[in-house]
Length: 338
Image (tube, rainbow, N blue to C red):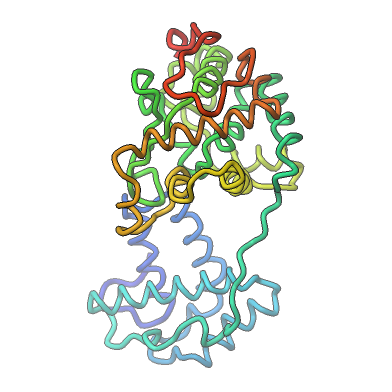
């Protein structure tokens, strides 16, 4: 427990007080809470937790936090996240009157790291797609209960935390849409994903394979007892499936790259993976956005069919990418099963 309000004397007091607020905030995602908790307790507090607020300055930060992280081989992105967490903690403490002066106010991460911070390279590329789809489809065919998650993420480009929180009540058969509530999304905006006939067939095969006890759960990805699959268990599953060669996020990156290869409009692609576009760009996507997103996913799933997706969906043939509002000739039982 951090010190009481008005008693934030040390850097550790400030950061732990801020962390407590982050963890109590229902609008904050579980994944952000976990990563922030880990950063604070494993990196920040051990390094500068005992430093008095009035003693914290650029030199102390460099000597006790940034440079040791460099020497330990921590990547620049990790260093930046630690610095940003400190800035946010002190900014909130300053705004709420819990400290007299903010020692982080004039500091930026570029004060310590002047170079550009590159993004992590993807571990999957376009040339990996056919073998990847065949592997994931074969896994699903052998074990649908554990094989659905990576296929759903590849098919839609969703984040792992958003996907794991899916409930059957979020899936509308009448509208053929998957609704991701705003509280489940990093963007804090409700996200709507059209469901293609392939995905509806996939979900039907999956639900038919679930153990009877788990069919009573409202979660799409339940475990024994009815609770949903946790992020840590899901990550372990991905490590097993990939042999540690790629992560769940690599599926999201690959999907986005492939949308570009298929000629999907940039703004439609960004909307599908639920990136924030800004007010000006949002106006570019007019009321036909769902039709355009549906067409884009149909084209993408047709490409997956060419790579072997049909082994998992059970459909006899790939549907044309240009089809809209397609009937489901080979999935007559889907609605009944779902």
